[in-house]
Image (cartoon, rainbow, N blue to C red; front, side, top):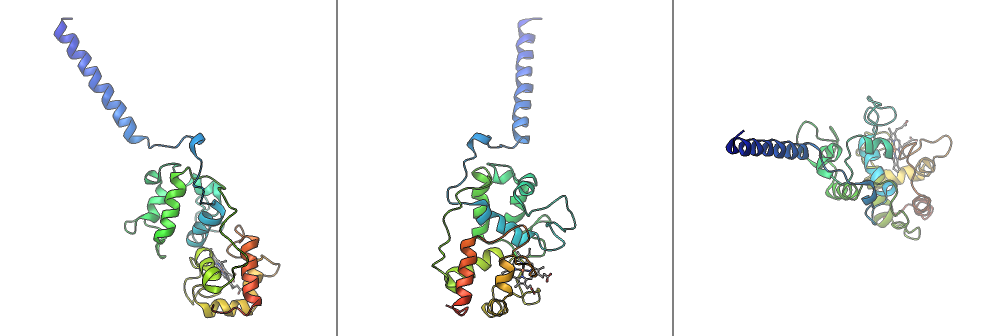
Length: 228
Ligand code: HEC
C-alpha cells in the first residue's frame, strides 16, 4: 500500500467511526445515572405527581386497574415509570410529551381537558431530577388551615376535578362549591375520602389523601362547609 492509499484508508475509517458514534448518540437518549437521581426537594411523588395521573388518566375505561388496557396502568409508581418515563430526560419521555403538547395524535388525556401549566411544570421537574418515588413529603399541608378557598378548593382541583369535571359525572363537579357542599352535607365526601366501609373510596382505591388533608376536610365540614 502506498502512502496515499493508507492515509485515504485511515481517513475513511475515521469518517465511518465518527458516523457510528454520532448516530449511536442520537438514538440512545440520555438516562440519568441512578446515583444522580436526587429528586427536587419541593416535590413529593405521592402528594404532587401521583394525583395528576390518577385524576386525569385512570378514569374508567382508561389507564386504571380496570382500564381497557391493563398493561398500561398509570395508578402507581412502578407502572408510571415503566411506561414512557426516561429519568433525567423529560424531552425523551413519551408520557411527558403526550401531556405537555396540546396537539397531535398522541395528545393526552384523550378527550379530556389538557393538564395546566403548573401540572406540566411539576412533571417536567420531577422527571428532570430523576423521576424518583418519595421525595420530601413532610411539608405542604397545615391542618389548621381549612377554609374552602385556601385548602379545600385547591385539594379538589388536584385530586378530584380530573374525573369530577362536570355535573353529569356521578358525584358531580368538584370544582363547583355547591356540589362539594351537597356531598359534604350528605356525609359521602368524608366517608369516601376516609375509605370507610360502604363508601366509594376516593380519589381511588389505590390513592388516599393524607391524614392532614382528611383533617382539613373534616374540620371544614364540621364548621358548616362554608364558602370561605
Ligand atoms: C379516577 C377518577 C376519580 C377521581 C380521581 C375521583 N373520583 Fe369520585 N367518583 C368517580 C366515579 C367513577 C364515581 C362513581 C362511582 C360509583 O358510584 O360507583 C365517583 C363518585 C364520587 C362521589 C359520589 C359517590 C356516591 O357515594 O354517590 C363522591 C362524593 C366523590 N366521587 C368524591 C370524590 C372526591 C372528593 C375526590 C377527590 C378527593 C374524587 N371523588 C376523586 C371517579 C373519581
